[in-house]
Length: 110
Length: 120
Image (cartoon, chains in turn purple, red):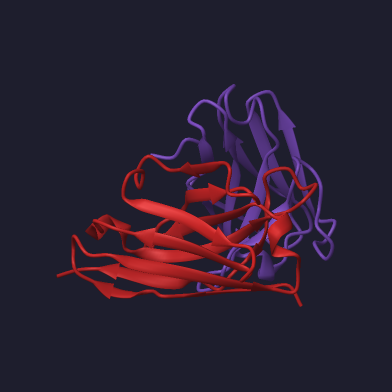
């Protein structure tokens, strides 16, 4: 299983807010910034959030990230149908040492 | 335009070898840490390997250590992944990614991926 733990699925209706959690340990999330990626099936992943809560140019403000201790969270407000995708958290693990991903969360917009 | 294009994927028998290439353009390749990330069919993302700009530091996932070798040629703006002793579980789309400067450890640019299938 993955070093970082995410819920396998999440869902919401248009306009709602959805939160996706990512749990790790002191050697990964507790020591390094967390990043989030969005992947629409059949396409390459896209960077959504970096350094815990920063958005790359072009990413809507509806997407936000946070981190506390050994856990992180991605929030999507004002849910839209095009947000339906897989979401992955990721960081570096100092003890391994290697990059680590969460198992991914499939977001369904009902 | 910042771009990375992978090549070299294909069908290979268990125990065989394959060399993936990633051609970068639109940015100063030699300034960036580069990585390989893979995704098995229907599965999540898995970090495979990273190499810093000077090639002085290289890291591998335990699942590929001793079998895969990452390298780069800054003069050719290219990243490589030599894959030996391939196993069925190495079947995946392999993505070339760039670690953004001032973005911590985030992969800010991804290639389109190249498919590797290990099967007899």
